[in-house]
Structure formats: structure tokens, C-alpha cells
Amino acid sequence: MRYAKLGRTDMEVSRITYGAMELGGGNAFSGGSTRWELRPEEDNIRLLRQAFDNGVNSFDTAELYGAGRSEFIIGKALGDVRKQCVIATKVSAHHLRPKEIRTALWQSMFRLNTDYIDLYYIHTPSNEIPIEESMGELSKLKEEGVIRAIGVSNFSLAQLKQAMQYGRVDAIQPEYHMLQRSIEDDLLGYCLENGISIMSYNSLAKGILTGIFHKGKEVTDFRKERSLFQSENLLKTADLIRLLEEIAAAKDATLSQIAISWLLRQKGLTSAIVGTQNEKHFFENLHSIDIELTEEEATKLDAESKKALRNLG
Image: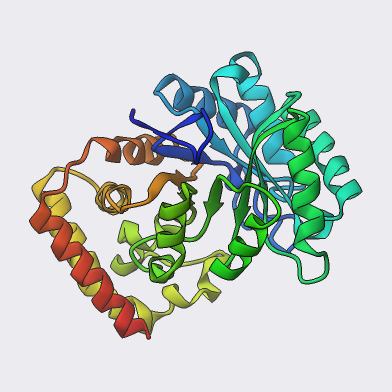
């Protein structure tokens, strides 16, 4: 495993972060409590321990994920190695008033079986609660040592700049993959200039970049409503999938490994968040850290990715 510094903190995170949304079944308060099939708790605990044993020290969850179920499982799995882990969780937009932040944090810590949080994110910005109130409280919690770093997720550049006026943000969590590169327009450059880590979510575009849906696998869950999974858009991304297949075949790798390897090469990317309950898939994805793309391969993938994005409009 390889590691990278988290923002301007003294923490280092593995280049692959275990994303634990699936462990809770989805976002419990947004109509998605059963978006992902729930595996037995003991299987999830075993997978988390195996991830840790294979060098993963970075784990990402949220109070939203299964109304705390994801946090409970992480707390059970990693309790005895807690100090060797960098655990990130998130406070929801409807809990961003100062007193509510403290309550949500205490509850998350209880579920995670810990008395501090390494990285505490604002999950999504609020249109109702002033950011100065939320950041002011998070900064106090940081001074008290209850949290070690502040992060934001799903923030635009303007929202990030505003948050930075009221406290230090050390990490941002945007959607970033070969079919979603909008952060490269402005957000990425600002993060590089200010030492803010980028932790990508949906690193495999919810499975599109595995190629299985281009081969006819039926979409039976919530993803069937998503734009990328529509038949016309599968056609528009087919050339990218073919190139991934070509490079994967040459390296005896999976398409997922090539897609994650490409992502890890991107300037400013600290860690790719990869979430699955499938042990085989997770460890395949974990080994993307060992895949070395040539400059020619990376250039071709970059060009094909941009072409697909133009086609998608």
C-alpha cells in the first residue's frame, strides 16, 4: 500500500480508502435505505479487517449511511486497532447548527466506538444554516481535540472558499472518475494551491467503469434511473470501455483496476474511495495501486474519457 499526507495535518491516509456506504444500505434519510443489498454483519466485519491487514488505514462513513449502521460496523471491526486508522465520518446538512453538530458527533463517536474523529466532514452544504456557524463549531471541536481535521463534501469552489474564511478545511470529497471530471475546471487547482486533499467518491462511476453493464448485465436497483446507465449513454461511453478492456487485457488486469489506476495518477488526488461488500472485488480494486500505466496508455485514456464526456454533453 502507498500513503499520502492528508491536507496540512500530520496524518497519512492509504491511497485507497474503504468507502462504507454500502455497509448501511445507502442514505437512510433520502429514500435510499435499501439501495444496496445488506450482507451479514460478520461478513462486513471480516472484510474491514482484511482491508486493514492489507494496508488500508483510511475508512469513510457517515451518520446517514443506514441511519448509523455503517458506523456501528466500522466501530465493531476496528475498535482494537482504532489508533492505527484514519476514520472519517460526516454530519448531515440538517444537523449543521452548532448544538446539533455536537449531538451528531457524540452519536457518531458512540457508534464508531471512539472518543475522537480523525476527519469530520460536512456531508452537503446547507442552504439554510450559515456556513460561519457550522465552521465555527467545527473549529471549536478541533481546538478541543475531539476532531483532528475538518472536511467538506459536495461543495462547489465558491462554497469551499466561503468555508475556508471561517476555519481550515483539510479535505474535500467530490465525485471524481473518468466520466465525471468537473472538479478539474477550478476546484482541483484551488485545492492544490491550498494543500487541501481530494478524496474521490464514486471512483468507478457506480460500476459503469467495470464494463459489465456494457455487456448486457441488467440494472435492477436504483441505478436504472441514473443517466449513465441509460442505453443511449452506454453507447456513448462504449469506446472508453473498449479502451479500458484493451489496456486491461495487456496488463492481465480488470477494467476496474485500470480505471482506479488512472484516477490515482491524477494530480491532486489523495485517495480514491472504493466501496463494495464483495471481498473479491475489493481486493481486485485494492491491487490497482500496483498497476503502472505508461504515459501512452494514460494519454489515450485521458483523451477517450474527454471524448465520452463530450458525447454525453
